[in-house]
Image (cartoon, rainbow, N blue to C red; front, side, top):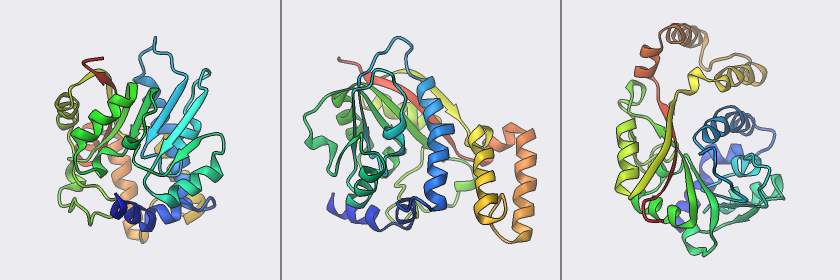
Amino acid sequence: MESFSKLYDSMDEYIRRRDPASYENKRIELEVKYFKIPNLVEVLPKEFKYSSVAEIGCATGELIGTFPGSDIKRRVGFDISSLNILSARKKFPQVTFYNNDFRLSAEKFDLVILSDILEHVEDDVEFLQAAAQMGKLLLVNLPLEKCLINLFRNYGFDDPSGHLRSYSLKDGLQLFENADLLTLKYLRKWSLESEYELFRQKLNEEIKGSRFSGNLLQQKIKVFIFLLTSHFHSLERFIFSSNLFASVCSKYQ
């Protein structure tokens, strides 16, 4: 755990994200508000009531700090990065944050959230099983990166985002089954087809001067690809990664 803690303390992506004025901080706020939260709420069973919520791998706290619920009385975030937790505590003082492995806690919650975390852990099955024991219901957001754009990506400890493996939709659903979890509802979503993508491009233009990164030629190519795939979703879905959003629970509770 200590080596992973140092990894995420020192990773460039998180260093920039901990700066409230940074592009990365503003981008994650948009992603949480316009992509993650709407889709996680969509897979919540309509009748499920929750007054306590925990997020495992909360990073700088944007999701647990803003997750909706009129009856929520307790919000808790767990993360192994001490610097991420310091940043989260400053930003969301109403949330209780712990800088340790959630498996060291005996606390139970109505709802537990895992968002973009399973691809970072060595044993995803064991991790899921432990998370399911902590909550009555588990909300999972899992990136599905088995697509053309990631064909030659070198997954593992040297991956720039710390992703140890990639998943397909079939892999994600099988992962729940391997962890003895019951899938209640799931959605597959592409961020390029969401409201978030338009807000992200607008943020790029405001801060970086253009909607897409790269030199002028690269920008024009990206604009062309974006416009093309926006009209042909089957092509877009073949090229780009998507996300699996699911509500799951233990088969034995």
